[in-house]
Image 1 (cartoon, rainbow, N blue to C red):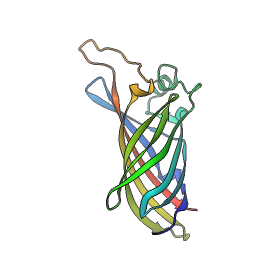
Image 2 (image 1 turned 30 degrees about the horizontal axis):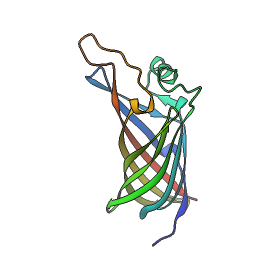
Image 3 (image 1 turned 180 degrees about the horizontal axis):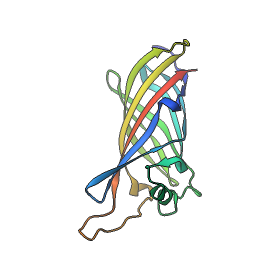
Length: 177
């Protein structure tokens, strides 16, 4: 078994994105622009990895200033009171070669719940400067109302303005420290 190393996330080549149903008929996509992570892992065997993410909620960007400000308000994330989203892994199970189920505690809006993300190890490469890089993709779905994010509006034609299921997509490029 290879040894674990610390990895530094290259936020320029990484992203934390989401999508959610809007008015029952469409999806709104967004991203969080500011985040950091602490990763200690053997990329060839993530089952022993320690993974932590911290996301600055105020960095939300849905390409609409008014919507972003509403999402930052007390109706949704209440960034003044709850400025960070956090994830800390607790259990990692290998499903197949390079595929893992990563379970951990996700804290949003002051509520902590267990969540599971499917993680794919995308491989390693050495950059022109001799730095070892590794790539990872993660996907999952969370229920926003379970975190107290319950604001909504009923539509005249039926249904609600904002869906409850949030699809999360994470792309990470990290450099071995």
